Length: 301
Image (cartoon, one colour):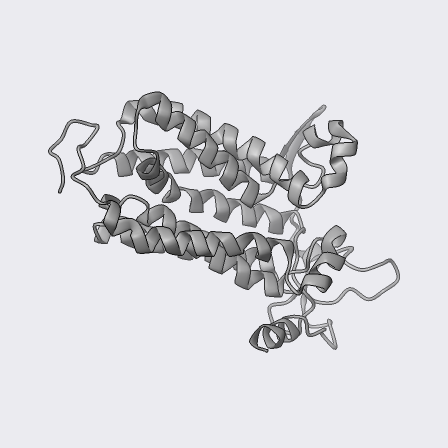
């Protein structure tokens, strides 16, 4: 009953759109600039900016006592993580949202055709980090803890890029901050104002989640409990994404799936994240051992 109430409230159609902001009036464009055949898109910059800022912040974290790896590992780690993000994100999108692409394999390599899946990116990155940890004989779970603290940068920039692209918009609404996006309904119909769900996700998955992990790392001893930080990340993201999906339109090709199951595909994918994240947080204290710093400083009990 609660879920149906939230869904009904989120999907209330705006009776009038005259007072709402039109997306086209914001002057936003997916492309930063074009030179000949080369086009730089904001979405690409979001990935690059998230990776670079995450790498910078990782170095700050590694400088603290009890780090699971040394600074010399960071460059190699970024390569594994980036590869996991791209491969996992793209394959995840194809598997979860557009399996018909397997009938036309070349479409899989067209990253602009459909986009990426965060859940797939998480799986791909985790596999990459496990391979990285095995190569360097590091604690793979503690490596995940540190990387989890850096991910909100990419999520924040990525959702802002979704907004600039005018994609992944929300359900019709009559709230004052609703935005009239372009081409959301068949030609000839009146475009309704919609929830700017991309900005909701940028705030929750980016700013709020970063603040939570920042507090846990810098103000508590969470980094000494293997799995607690990554557990907080997975749990926090799962709750944030699950909630925002009530205000977001389902992917067009999965609209029937959402109507049949009562939840969006993104919400179903968040369920194991919420359960797994809660488990990691609840059991992290049991995994705590004396931490020997890879960087050579004193061990931490």
